[in-house]
Image 1: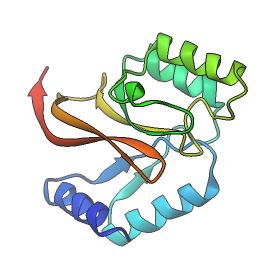
Image 2 (image 1 turned 135 degrees about the horizontal axis):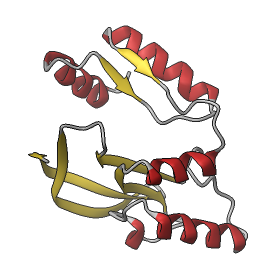
Image 3 (image 1 turned 180 degrees about the vertical axis):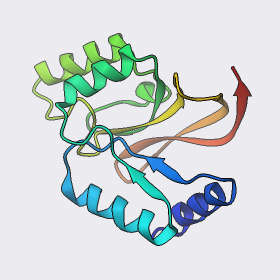
Length: 154
């Protein structure tokens, strides 16, 4: 298991976290990894999106009032301006434009095209405020490294 990820999960567990919600949709190897890691850590894996159509997942996410930002993106598909971008209707529109330009990608980023960090949602008691981020390119990906963030009451 990834040492940094394991450390994060253990910190969350010590703080009363009993389960983790994952946004995986259809890649079985991801599901298998999630179930294994959560089992090792004694927390419940929750995969509420499993089996849904990707475009419907993204639209439902936006409509439900969740807020997320892009924290990594494949450099051969996206430039650094996509980092920190909110997942909203204009994001989906721009993804569809990329598909129209012949780019092969899953609108939810299921093949690692991009990754997000959910900062708020209707079920959250607090909102995550990113106070500082650094854009860097490593190994063919853009990353928004987030050394500072804080939880805020809504």
